[in-house]
Image 1 (cartoon, rainbow, N blue to C red):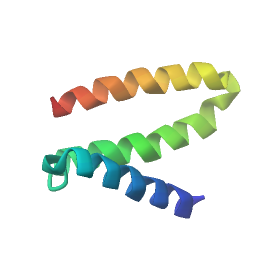
Image 2 (image 1 turned 90 degrees about the vertical axis):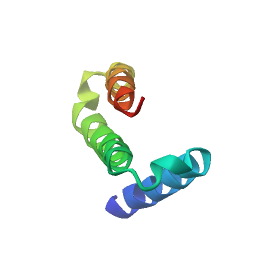
Image 3 (image 1 turned 60 degrees about the vertical axis):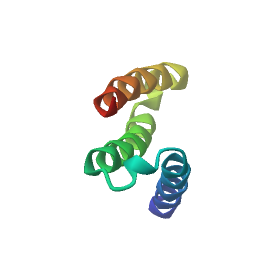
Image 4 (image 1 turned 135 degrees about the vertical axis):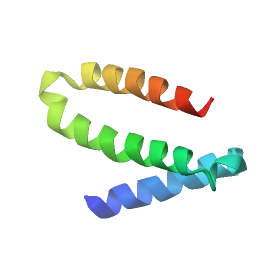
Length: 71
């Protein structure tokens, strides 16, 4: 499972950095993206018993708030 997350992180960062090259060397951006990817996966896996749609809604709301730090 860890290898899958590593590949997802690498792929998503590649896409993000191609669109926003200014984020590539930003410690803040890299930490936020890694936190969102790994934390989101972990939270989803451990809280899915509350209902997958509900967990996804909460994670989306959290990620929107986290990403405001980059603005």
